[in-house]
Each structure stands twice: as structure tokens, then as C-alpha cells.
Image (cartoon, rainbow, N blue to C red; front, top):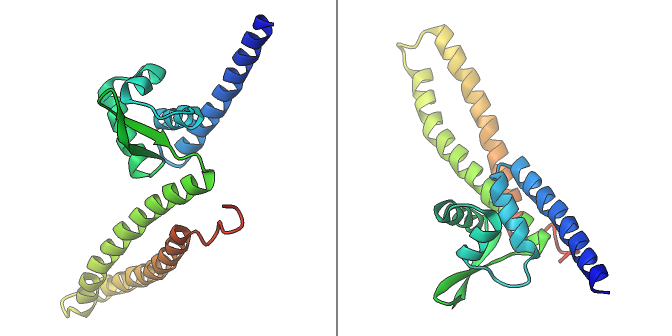
Length: 179
């Protein structure tokens, strides 16, 4: 009977590893480091919080790389630092609700995109407008500036829409039936 139980455990762990690799590949697809995805996958299947040392043992990474991975996953709210400690070491736990991880990951990434692009457009449009109005600007250059201005105004409209999408995503508007 114990051999059969060991076989089952081996099979379960192999199946778990398949899912961990799939999580890592998926996160990599969206710009997260593959090894960070593996770490999230490992933590996803853990039934208890983990310390950095425990993560390091699972991942065979240096403590500094592990700390960087943890900070990255925390910034996306895919894992959280718990208030309690184990043997004076910080404890971390993965968010296991895929709806919540999707919400956290994408609102973080999309909000950053909106912020960067909106700031760039807001600082560029007035300067471009000055070039257009400047009497020293050649007609050919003025036309190019007008084309650029039109593109930027379209981008501003898109990022205003994307901000509304991010706000709805943050509010959970797309998950009401699933959470």
C-alpha cells in the first residue's frame, strides 16, 4: 500500500510541476520573469506560508535573486507578506484566487502604462503645439508636427479609455459573477 501511495504522490507532484511550468510560461508571456512565475506557481500550491529560505531551497536561487523575485511578485500583489513571522523570518503567501491575481497583475501593469504615456503626451503636446505656431517653423515641418499632434490626440483618447478600463478592473466590475 505504501508503494502505491508513493506512486500517487510522485504522480501528483509531476502534475503539479506541469501546472507550475504553465503558470511560469503564462506570466512570462505577459512580461514577468519566467523564474518569478515558477516561484509564484510553487507558492500557489503550498498549503502554508513560506520564508525566503524555503523559497530559496525550492528554487535553487541566490537569496538576493529570491528577494528581488519576492519584491516583484509583491508589487503585482501576487504574493503578500504576512504580519506574523516564523523563527524571526518574514512569511509570504501567494494569492490563490486567479480572478484576483489577474485583477492585481493587469491593473498594476496597465496603470503604469497609462501613467507613463499620459505624462509623456501631456508634456509633449504643448511643446509640439508651440512648434506648430512658431513662425520660424517651415511649412513642411509644421505639417509633420500637425500629423504627430493628431496621433498624440488619438493616443490621449485611447489612454483616457484605458484608464476607465483600469478603474473598472480595479473595482472588480468584470468579476461579479465569478468571485
